[in-house]
Amino acid sequence: MGLFGKSKKKKPPIGPPMDVAWVRSPKRLFYNFLNLEPDELDLMGKTGVFVIWLGGHWPEWLYIGRAYDLGVTLAELQHNPKILRYDKEAGLFVTWSEIKSEFQDGVVQYLNQVIPPMLENPSPPDEDEPPIAVFPPGVPVPPKDRA
Image (cartoon, rainbow, N blue to C red; front, side, top):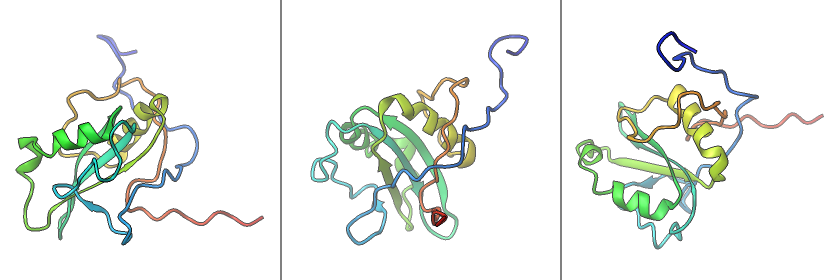
């Protein structure tokens, strides 16, 4: 613990990164965030972690969050002016993974450390939350050893 409160020291994740199967479209592409129709993708009432980013020649991780209702949360964020100001020619993209609520804070904590987003989440996990290592979206998952 720090002198004036919680420790600012990052905790190392427990174990190697896991594949959380980030969702892609049927064409194996990531979804365009502003064209996403959460109700058509049956996201209402589903819980998970999501990542929004800016595509193009200089892609940027934009926002990382968790949701107890992915459909509602993503629909609300499609109208968030802080996110919309980044919508340029390259577009905004999104993916998510249905992760049990008890693990979401740890996954978000880890992603915030390895792919820091440009926009701060207004309700981030507690800084003492132990990170849970996952492969970030788009990072190839190495094949499993055949022993």
